[in-house]
Image 1: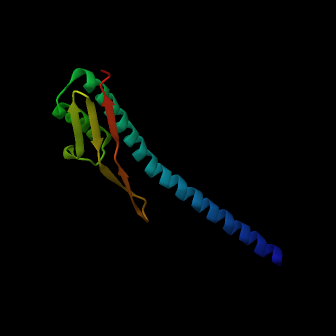
Image 2: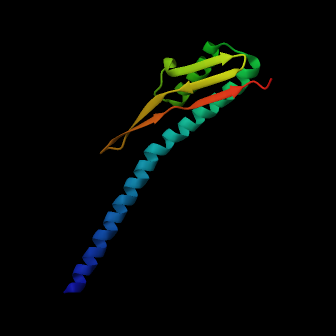
Image 3: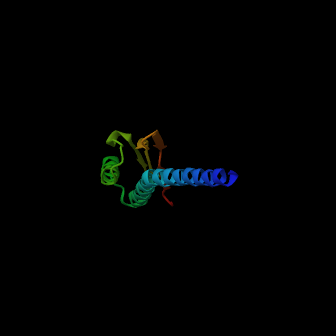
Length: 122
């Protein structure tokens, strides 16, 4: 008689572990692309800052290039969220935005603030 209860307990334990595993995979499926997009944006910002130090484009041109990347990546940020400071000493670019991730039972808010600072070598 006690053997039947033990088998049912292990079955319940396996189902619970399966649910935890599925929830983890689902969360990763929703969250990892958001972090990859942030990394791609930061990479674009770093590239823009490097070239801007040499080529000296206007702050609006830099902002437009970054905003185009934001639109391509479908990041929920606006053009006015992009801060650009270009001077003879270097270029600073930063963006502040929040992504809402729908996990069905919880709304996860991920806040990002990628920033780069590239200084001239002279």
